[in-house]
Amino acid sequence: MGHKGRREYLQAIYERYRKADRKSKKVILSEFCASTGYHRKYAIRLLNGPRPEKRPAGRRRRGASYSREAVTVLAEVWEAAGYPWSLRLKALLPDWMPWIRKRFRLAPGIEKGLLRISARQMDRRLKAHKTQRHRRIYGRTKPGYLLKHQIPVKTDRWDVHSPGFTEVDLVSHSGNSASGEFAHTLNVTDIHTTWTESRAVLGRGEQAVQQALDRIAGTLPFALRGVDSDNGSEFINWHLKNWCEQQKIQLTRGRPYKKDDNAHIEQKNWTHVRKMLGWERYDTPEVVEAINDLYSGEMRLLLNLFLPSVKLLKKVRVGSKVRRVYDAPRTPLERVQACPEANAETVARLQEQKKGLDPFQLSKNLYRKLDRIYRRANRRLSPKQMQRPKMGRGSGGENGCGKVEIKTRFPLSHSHGGDGTRVTFQMSRRSTPGLHS
Figure 1 (cartoon, rainbow, N blue to C red):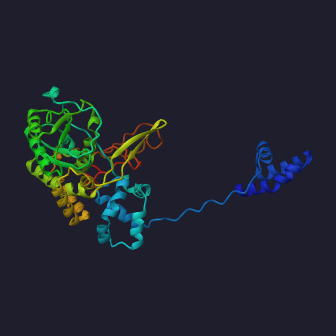
Figure 2 (figure 1 turned 30 degrees about the vertical axis):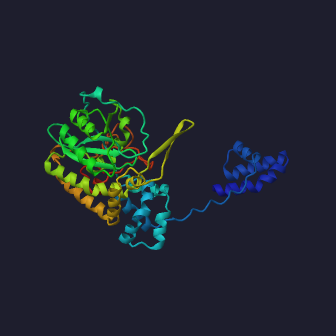
């Protein structure tokens, strides 16, 4: 007798057992135990327990709300946009829809489904795509002791309401060896608008870094008013200090060994540099020129004009947890437009330029340039890919005994999507990744 049959039998004899006398109960109980195979004590508990009610029919599962074609288009947009967080991905869909409609020739139903899908559903639908991406990160910042006492330490939190106050950092492209001269990326991000500019320099010379920062200041759509850096000698030097004094720019630094003091630029180091160029070694003037061509072209336009980002507004403590409240996703250009201090002529030119740009074509060109840059990397001093060891007989892995170390090139880390993975921009497109997946 199956479980369903036993339950129906219990429902049939329950009332008769409760109304029977002591002698009749023994007969009913013996018959019930013989038919169902229950232990006598367990059967007594069932018959003396609460009335066995009919279980409600299981809720019908809803069918899929979004077609496979809609999810495929969503994945294509997610890849072209550089794998943004689901909340940012949802925010960019309306802005990208003219080009999505032109590129994929969407049916009206699929277009409505794409605009209706929630951020949480995006995480679920794209989960299979995300599991293939990994990351690794390290830095080579060395402290600079010169002029430390003359450059103030910024210890308060950023609370600015106008553009121009920036955080800067230098990201090395040294590969596995820090010897010799190799490329660095000077990364600059504005605190208020999240506008980000990058330039590559060969070596970390004080004058080269200052000149790169001067070129970046000339391309910003607002005046550069403040520079906050770490304690590296490439920033704590007379060249940069004198230049900031001449340009009337506030120069501050974070506390030594406190990376959280420069949290904004540390985040951009990952999203705007490592996801693009990875950890390969680039050490020739030709590759530096190619990187700068990418930074000043497709990358600058795609990330600042088409990709929205969120900003942390406040933290609310709920019991033992801290809940973070973010503003609505907006592109850096939209934030710059809302600032009266921005250069109106530059903003108007950027708006007009955006109308004539196709984000999918920008992404395609960006990938093409990244492939050319990657081919120029110094392979001898770049990270080598580590293969997963095969688990054969006697290795101890198949029965749970022993320890088998399985190394991937870049360990998983947290993400806003909550699925434990992080996504890289360029190398994930290759079937056999040479850098990161």
